[in-house]
Each structure stands twice: as C-alpha cells, then as structure tokens.
Length: 601
Figure 1 (cartoon, rainbow, N blue to C red):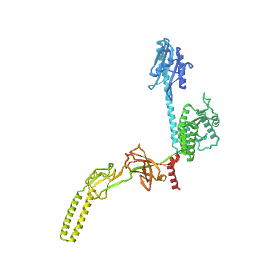
Figure 2: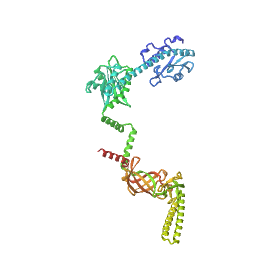
Figure 3: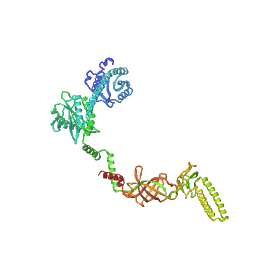
Figure 4: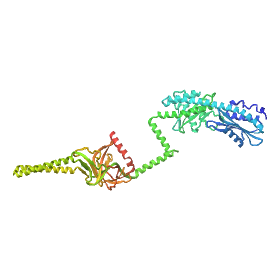
C-alpha cells in the first residue's frame, strides 16, 4: 500500500449539504472504498449540549466495534494523541483524536489488516484524512454558535418588548408581534389554559379578536392538541414523524394554507399554554426556527403568566390560590403538605377534646413576712459599721456604732450642773430657806432627767439587730464619719423563717385568681427546687410596670428551704382549674380580638 491509495482522503465533496452523522458515514464509506484492508471503523463526537462522547457513524453500519478498537479510541480520547495498536501481526487499530481549539472534540478509529509498515502509512493517511472531519466539525460548531446567538437575540428582543408593557394583554400582543417579525412568520398566536381549555389571548398583526370566531377556535384547538401531547407539533410533518396527532393542525392549515409550528410552554413543570407560529408554504420551519420558537416560549411563558396573574382581580387571585392549595392537598404528590394537614387536624381535635391544667404565669419575688427598720436615734455621725445587706445576724448583734462623744460631754456637763444644784439645795436647807430649797430641788430633778435621757441616747448609739434574720438593705461601711439625721432608715432586717411570695398578675388574668389557690414557684437562684405556695391575699390596686398593668397578689410558702433569701425573683404558676387545651392556647388571642371588636363597634 502506498500514498496513492488515499488520493481523496480529505473527505466527501458533497458534505456541505449533509448533517454531521451523514457526513461522517459518507466519509467512512469513502475511506473503505479507498482502503481495501479496512475491516471496521467508528467516528465518535462530543454531542451538544451534554458534551458526552457518542458514536455517530459505524462502518459497516450493522457491525459491532471490537473491544480492541474501542480501547484504542478511548486511549486516543484520554491522551489527546494518535494511537497505533497491533493486536496481532496482521491486525492493526488506528485512532486519531479530533482536536479543535486545543480541546478534544471526538475521535475516528479504524481497524484494518495490514503489516507494520502499511499500518504506519495508513496512520499518516488517517491523520491527513481526519482534517476533513475536523473542518466539518468546526463548521458545525460555528453554525451552532451563530444559531444560538440568533436565538438569544430573538428571545431577548421579545423579552424586552414584553417587559416594556405593564398590563398582560399589551405584553402578550407585544411578544407575538416581536416574534412574528424576528422569525419571519405570517402570524404568531399565544394561548393560556383556563379550566382545561386553551384560550387565545393574543394574535400578531391583529388589534382585536373574538373568542367565538372560527379562526380563534381553530387556533385554540391546535394549541390544545400540542398541549395534550406535551410536545411541539409541526405541520406538515417531517420524515419519520408520523406518531404525532395533527388533526386540529390539519384543520387550521386548511384555513391558512401554510406551515404551522406549535410549542407548549410550562411553569414549574406544569404546561400552562402554547405558542403557535404560521409561515407560508414556500418558507417551512427548519430546526433552527423550531429551536428559536422553543427558546422564546420557555422564557416568555412564565413572564406572561406572572403578568396575567398580577392582572387578575383580588377575588380571583384568592380563589385560584385556594384551588391550587386544595389540589395540592387532595391531589397526588406533596406528601409533606398532606402529613402537615393531618397533624394539624389531629392537633385541633385533641385541643378540643383533651383537657389540661390551666395555670396563670406571673413574675414573683420573695419578701420577708416581717421587715424591721433600724433607724437613727438622733442626729450624729457614723463611728463604725459591722454589718451590711445580705449578712445573717443574731438577735441583739451590733450592726453599727454611732459616735457618742458629744453625748458623753453633754452628760458630764449635766452631772456638774446637778452637783451645783445639790450644793445650792444644801445651803438653803441650812439657812431654813424653804423657797430656795424647793427651787434647787426642782433644778436637781431636771438635771437628773437630762442625765437619764443622755444615758438612754448613749445606750442607743449601738444599733442592734431586733431579732435573728438577714439584713435586707443597708450598708454603712462606705459612710464612716458621715452625718445622719434622726429617723433615717439605716438597716432593714427580715427574719429567716417567715417569708411571703409577691406575684405580679397581669390585669387580663387577675379575674382567674382567687384566695386559696395553690401553685409553684421557681426562683432564678434555685431553679432545681420548686416551692409550693398558697394565695392568701389579692390587693385590689393596679400598678404600671414595664408597659403593662399588674396587680399585687400575696401568697404564703408551704416550705422554706435554708437557701431562701428575701429579694429572690423567679416565675410562679398558679393552678386555676382544668380546661380544654384549645381554650388555653387561644385565650389570649380571643380576649384581644374581643377588645378590638368592642372598640370598633
């Protein structure tokens, strides 16, 4: 075998009118006619849009490629270079990758009976001949790129014309008018499904039309025919396309005497309408026009549907929303929605039947049942402080000491004065002056009373705890030497074994509280130790607190843990009675609604 064995390896001369699979098959047949030693061959290309490598031509057409030929083709694809493999002395496999723009787009592989030298020569000739496939593949991809760009222009122009319009009717008319011009169609129509019937909403080059016109009904029937089959319908049909029903299209064609293409469009997987385009018989729809109309329908359909929904009256929107939810709930699919509905109905049923304890929840505070104030006995100064808030003190334990030096000096002055009165009294008695003696006696009694008063004040300068308890408030440790005035509250002491709970009940629930009800309290300091209490007093005075109105309710504790201290706060729940769960859940909302309705009426 020599170089003259492949004089026309560049490819078929008439390939420009063939599609790629037919061109590849013709190329293989030509190679087989030029190379008598070729046993089988395959052409593999990356098909759009998935870019998966698929065989598009086999020679012989009914032959199955051998495993060695497939392995050689895969190796050439993987490594991006030509492969020459000899499975035995007389059989060789040749594979040449089709590289375009440094990317492997396919491979051509041959298996032939040849010696080593003949195989090398055939490999070289195959590399030359593959140039025809590469050139044709480049042309195909260039035409596809041009078609995609044209399709994008058509779709974007139609989209722009649609989005310029605010109302649905104007947007649909603009869309079909733009498509008719861009696709060179005699007429383009669009319809939407309404109650299982396709209603024509816009026809290009037509300002108005009636739904009862014969043409409108024919267009609607043709759209319904494509929607029911869920495929694009072309009339007259192409070769090998006889499985599609076209009765309505045939009826429409008799009126228009043209070529018809109908493309359904969907929203969220549900077909909602169709685009129908018509041309004259001398300009049939090719695959590019079919793709262009399909792309336009896929993009314009959802947009027009959104505009159509927005133009509907509010009542219609509510009805459509209700029907959609009803179909989702009662129809197929949406298992989560059905389970949620069942759970909701079961919860409502249980809420209307099952009863549970109704509790009033309120903020609570621990206070001492008795709270004794230790006040300043006179105006003076603080000498020392041995207790402050939070300390546990015993009865008569010193809390603080007031400065008594001024009182001591005053007492000495009064003692001296009393001694002087005593001398005056004795002299009056010796002189038998009864008037002077009586006056001196009265002055001595006065001095004696003043001394007793000063002794009492000096004794009270030590501030003592009235009983065993805890200091609730008061801290004089930072006021040593400071002045105080008589009657100032210096300390407050509460007993350790007598407490009460003060509940802040919201005004909306105060009517449910009665004396004698029981409940439980959890304090922030002792969250693991619930305390039982009993309501013993309701104060009929409201207080404003944190933007709401509350009533003060007092309760007595049934047990008093050693860790409990006045001032602790927490959450209390008062047991009222057992009521239906639905009433407990909706009580607050129902009361609010009643007040609003009362205010409106």
